[in-house]
Amino acid sequence: MAVTAEGARRKERVLCLFDVDGTLTPARQKIDPEVAAFLQKLRSRVQIGVVGGSDYSKIAEQLGEGDEVVEKFDYVFAENGTVQYKHGRLLSKQTIQNHLGEELLQDLINFCLHYMALLRLPKKRGTFIEFRNGMLNISPIGRSCTLEERIEFSELDKVPPAVQSLGDRPSVTQPSKPLLSHPWRGWGRGMRVLIRPVP
Image (tube, rainbow, N blue to C red; front, side, top):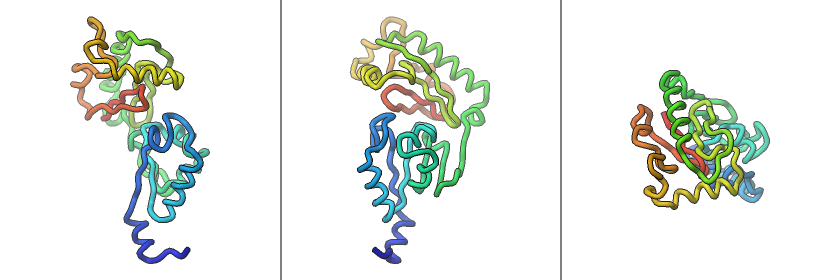
């Protein structure tokens, strides 16, 4: 089918963005081939892009093989948009250490490690803090938990905060007031097991 002038203008003007984890794919799983085919069909009419909290390599594992992801999507925004690709080329990469400075970054990491050490959880696994270019992934249960453990941990969100906070232990799902008072913009949540400081 020939592309009309109006169709070409629409393709230039319209960008459809899709979240990766929990929207295009289940958390940390590969995209369904039917969804991938639909996205490519949509791409013939409009520009498409993906947004995810994961780094580029994890997004690539889920949506394609290697560099093919930047060829399948007009835009890729990894690490909550701090790493940006447009039409297959890296546009920009922001680093958390340049934004916060080494001293504040270490204060944040130390505070989070101390905070998580006080948590009593059903399980704890490895990789509690993952350092990325533009952000940190902070996971009280640990990034190497299984899918079943991830689901079990996410069920803690359904427990009232008063029950979660046992004595002097902090709440699992709500960062403490001292943690929230640090000079970064805010906190994001991701994939059932993460909190992310956003500079």
